[in-house]
Image (tube, helix red, strand yellow):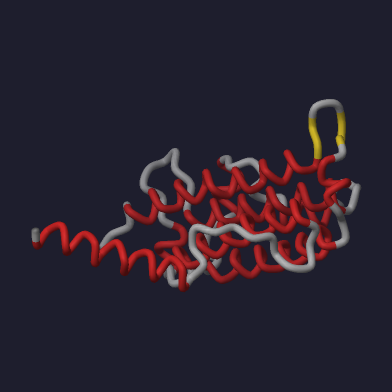
Length: 187
């Protein structure tokens, strides 16, 4: 009986915490159209969760590779920056990267040996600040769009909603990789 009572108390505590923090409820972010506002909510939630996971890493942890095929947390965060910047420029600005943007933001578009060699020795704050910069441009760009645009096709079978869903999905996938790398760090 006591065990059942303990579970009920635990459930009440969890529900109270969840309700107090609006967890488990997605609402469109104000200032955006309905569907874009929901996507913004998801993008911001994932970015916040990754930032909380990595913001206090030191340089060794940021650059840590658990084997020769792995990517560092710094590289993975920079890959998220590169991906978001690419789609932001393509879909919200309707253009290609400049050479300067590609050199600065596209360095981790493809996670490979070249990006691994370039993405060392920078503090986690460097990557998070870049992500903040890119995200701010994304938010401004999405705010200027509406749901009609969001559902319109870029080409047959691909609409802007799918593209931004892909960005969100990409962040979620790499959040798992980041957690795996972080779990392998020395305690």
